[in-house]
Length: 64
Length: 210
Image (tube, rainbow over all chains, first blue to last red; front, side, top):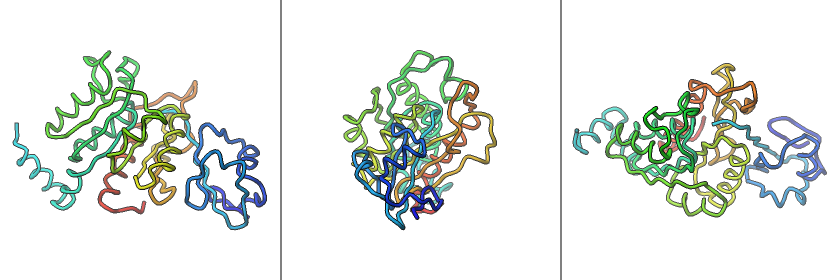
């Protein structure tokens, strides 16, 4: 299980890119932290989620 | 006009001498001077932050006045010039460094290098994501206070501050963006700006938990 935005999710074995696409996140308006470290965008495709990982996807909406 | 010493004493009497010393020696960057940024900058100037780095490329427009800290007489001025004018009326001893420029991946690291804390106060979600990724990747020693979700007339109590990771805070309701039906209201935008400004003060006071 991977803890994604506070919820246990069975995303083990998927790459971050695969998860983001399935969960309908727009890669242009997010920042992703894996185990409390920022994950640079070029690494989304090569980073495979493992059991026990903590993933935080911060999604920005317009307005300010 | 009070002298600088009288000013410092008045601030120290309100905030405590130790904390005021920290505030007055701190540098905070405000990226974007719209509804969030103009209100954040105003709160930080009132708190006696020593220096503000203020960045925006835009000019004051009639459509901004319903939520931004500008005046009808300032329509057409660059927001950087208008906010510096307003901040100096509030606190004549504040130091400001204004940049009338669009913040990009190319110029951000140089413009933000002196800041102890960086506030993101853009309205565009792509720009918000760009700066967030850039600062967290390239300036990991800075504190970063971002915002997402303060549009519409939804409950004020949904606006919160979250500590996403050690040096990264996110304020807002997280969901209410600007759409065709969801306008921005000064009161709700100011709530989010107040969360950001207060998070800056708490970080400077070394109160890191929410």
